Length: 469
Ligand code: AMP
Ligand code: ZN
Image (cartoon, rainbow, N blue to C red; front, side, top):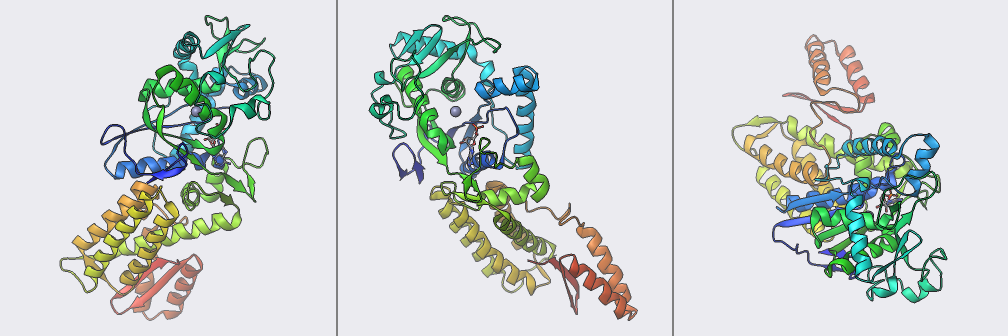
């Protein structure tokens, strides 16, 4: 079931073409580094994509780059660089940030400035069909000509006409009309068009780029909830008026990321860039934080919530690492059957949660329950059959690494800045000391390792270690 903003209810998910899902996510305006509020949107729909892929759908994922609008033009001027230079700079930075967050690359990241010709063609079509009009080099969309205007957002044309929510422009027939083409202003970049030099409006960009790469009707259109009105409402008005077909079947919108209770945004100045957050807390902690709430619930960023995410991540990883380190045996040990039942139960609960409108906190709860079982298993065993180990790790990797994008195979690299190989070497040296009955030095090493966050357990069959959960 998927919650559809268009129908305001959860609906069964059926893509237009069986086995294939086409998704369009509104991308960033590239005038600065993205902040963790923006990242919330990109991570949320990355999880949607990954889950659909996990379910066996072939996904085509398109996410645009808005590289021409008021903000980019103003910023390029401020920095005294061209719009193109600005776009390249922050598009690159955006890709780097997404990569750090393990957001899978879109199949296409179309840039608005590379599709101006197609935008002009769509505007011409809208004029021809009587939905748009030209005033002094500007082209406007006449919202009164599209009877379904407001169907996504619930906004009423009549109340808009009273001028409540949109600025008044003397060129417009109705205050609710919006610009498809804006005539050139002195000093601004421009393109030639049948109506004179100018540039496209923001909404037409997405109507054009989605139809080029995904067709006139596709499955999922997504973005933050501020995009419902006017952006997505206007996209529907443009695309559906031109094609006579529905633009997207399911409209998904994420809630805000807030900081100390207030919406994180550029204009309020209360934002943290993804790069700063990644260097301070780590990309995986940030991702864990972002998926810890359902995408349609608000999530507050503060020291407590990010610390909770760090602890949760560590708990999952240390448990899986300890399990990975179990010696591989040829035969089963006691308790393996139960463990395999738990892992199947995990898969069932995880899918149930994700099938219910991508409920990541519920999916994580299933993971934590499983982690407790796994710890209990690992804690009292020296080894596990190769087959069971493989089966358990396969499910973990599919769900955690695959769907949630949480990397569990960190053992070979390092955890908390320490290489596990080095820890093992230290423990080997400590065992030599113990055999020589130098218990004082052995205890000293143990307490130092514990200070660093390790738990050391000596038993008759050897010494084991894990990270404190
Ligand atoms: P923008 O570059 O401003 O167009 O934003 C890119 C995406 O981030 C859009 O889908 C926005 O709705 C979304 N977004 C912006 N701020 C937040 C926030 N504080 N929380 C969640 N999503 C946000
Ligand atoms: Zn868009």
